[in-house]
Each structure stands twice: as structure tokens, then as C-alpha cells.
Image (cartoon, rainbow, N blue to C red; front, side, top):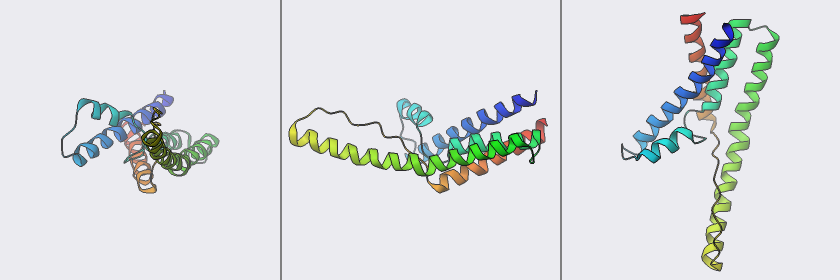
Length: 150
């Protein structure tokens, strides 16, 4: 039964982070959004807060509450979460920057040579601040699960 709380933590971490992204997006656009904008915002990578960080931090903390913070499974969860946060901040963020530069080159090539090369889909990573907010969100979710269910 306790494993269900770990799944709940993951789902809540992702869902709440995506809803917060949507709220921030709507505020940024001053309410002028389309249904397509809303769908895109809910499934895109990157943005405030980090859903990856929120969901995996919630999982890790819930495992700590369930199995103990000195358990082997908690240590494994911490290692996985740190890799995911590192990847979101460093690797995916850099890949997104590279994608934007490549798209500018593609636009220039299409304009100059009349080519019809399609632009790349740019995958956004996270800033350290986005990951930090995701971390706090994940800890909060796991703590609420502990208070209300464990």
C-alpha cells in the first residue's frame, strides 16, 4: 500500500508543477492565450517550476518517509533525483540553447538559398531557480502526503 503513496507523490509533483507553469504562462501573456497555447504549455519541457525536479523530489522524500532516510532505497532515490536535476539544469538547458542557434542558421539558409529545411523542435531545460522551486514543491508534496496519509 505504501508504494501507492510513492506513485501519488510522482503524479502530484508533475501535475502541480504543470498547473503552476500554466498559471505563470497565463499571467505572462496577460490572459491572452488560445486553447493550443494552453495544451502546449501543459506538455512542454522547461519553465517554472521544474516538473522533473518536483516529481522526483516528491518521490524521493516520500520514499524517505516510508522506508526511512537511512535506507538503501532512499539513497538510490537521492542519487537518481540528483542526476535528473543535473540533467535538467545543465544538459537539457544547453541542448535548448544549441537548438535555438541551429534554428537561426536554418532560417538564414532558407532565406539565402531558398531551401525548405524545417526548423528543429527546441527542447527547453531549466534554470537553477526553476529547479530550486521544483525542489521545494516536491518536498512540500511529500510532507503533505506524510501528514495526511502516512
